[in-house]
Image 1 (spheres, rainbow, N blue to C red):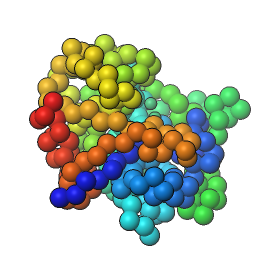
Image 2: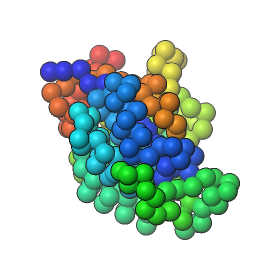
Image 3: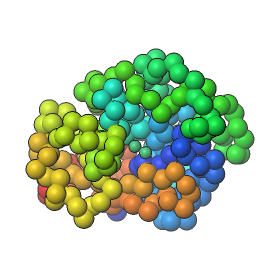
Length: 241
Ligand SMILES: [Zn+2]
Ligand SMILES: [Zn+2]
């Protein structure tokens, strides 16, 4: 059993709001520099760059998981994290079919670019990724859990795009693996709004710039950093709540 330092909420160049400095290579180098053991790149409604982050991480002692930060029909941000790119890509295809076909105004929102491990731009995503996908939070979590992934609502203490800002509470019938907060020290204030029992709180960076990677992180005790092992470690954390 070892302690893994995890930051599972990082944006890359594929997020319009993410810095163009957030190439897969830069993310991996920064993560190593700040002593992270496990990372996940989670761009808005798309997983494509997480493939290149995994490639870039391969030659180092760093585990990169694949995923995205989904925006559901209720305008809730939800982290969907998978072990392998194949499943993340299958989820991306599913989600892309449910994403409104509205063109990105890159001057206003920023560029959405797929970048390989050599910092080369492979393509620009033309469809606006900062939008609500036509899928409910229930159905999204069902898909994620039935494909072996982790489902973690993002920044639930944020005044926008969070499960608390949109629903007002965390229901007890959606099997989230954890709840992400920005302020770990304020978790007590949220407890009356959380119907789901024994669910652990985690904190990740939500980095949009290299310097932010790892600024918030969660330590997990486990043997290996697979989604299954992370789910188990989270369950153990939750039973302490
Ligand atoms: Zn978010
Ligand atoms: Zn985010």
